[in-house]
Image (cartoon, rainbow, N blue to C red; front, side, top):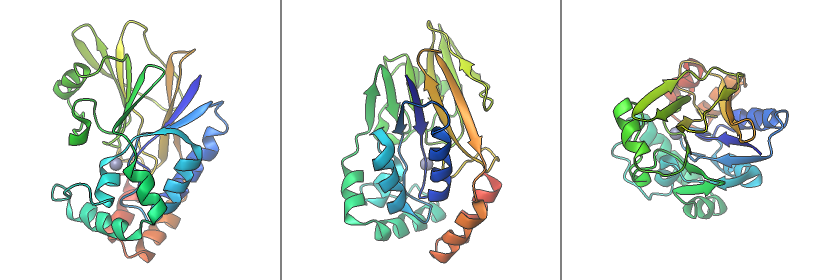
Length: 244
Ligand code: ZN
């Protein structure tokens, strides 16, 4: 069974459409979504409609929560907060009720799905250090956990007491080991932050026991124009071109 993981779409419909078209070419059996469907981008309702159509399982992200007014956005920077306010006003009723019903975590065939991190998922902790990864491995029992949130694709391996960040090059299946555990950050569809503006997603094939990262060009300038036309902060358009 081959599962495609899409995450951090952030209202970027053009990027999402490129990713979904690519998924069609990758012998993928099912699609799941790791949250942050909305926030930052100009087409939140359209993105939620697409996700509802294609995703077999979806978990909630912090920006989905923020757009529903379910969390304090004081911790957000000014751009994220302005975008959250804009998104709150933009969401239609159907989108709101879909987002409101999403769970923090899901388990699918022994794989844990969560937006930010397994330990206290509602705290939206970033896994950006070995120390944090160590703590997170102690808070789930599954062998594989798939996350988003940082918008930085990476595979973190636990092998005995060792924690290693593996390089996750695009288009090369990364073979996993049956006796090791993994935290896989699947990258971001709508707002990549690894200085590569291309959209991305990850698939995992349980028969091969391998993960593969895809990165794809999409019409960035078209989305930038939509952001400006929507009256969202111009910085949010610029960062898409810079991949930050
Ligand atoms: Zn995000």
